[in-house]
Picture (cartoon, each protein chain N blue to C red):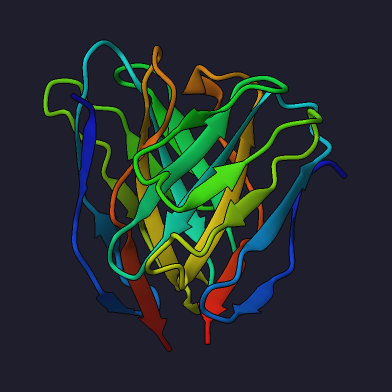
Length: 114
Length: 112
């Protein structure tokens, strides 16, 4: 079955460290997205990518970086510049950037800074 | 601009009660509207959608009708079950543009 795989499910990071969250999809979707979810705040867009080797900042990109070297993969790096990185991170994809078709989401990665 | 306003929770209902979660939106043009459900510790799953005015989306006993005149997409279910306990997100997908707009989510707990 096609879908999106996020790993790891739980991740712990020491302050000052960079960490990379993995997102892989086998849906042949062109567009991929990273969202951050905090309690009571819904989902906020971090970065999105329409095609390979291209990506755009979302609403809260500061302290994060991404790459899109392959259509199937869209890893997110949480850098030490991100002041409050503890959150639930969701990756999503869609067939095209125009969003009438809806998103498919991964199962998320919960990042905790210790 | 585009935005979604969703009924605040948490909502607690007894099994077999009627559910309504309100959602209103602001958008330019003619967006598609969605309801997503998130079970504890998991990602979001598409529950239902409607792509034009007066369309009714339905799935697993849930329904929502795209009302352009009231800019609403309220989620309803006639008889909830314990297994419906989750967080529900209303979302707007503009026909042009580059992202979804999500509501803040409504937590539903159904007690036996």
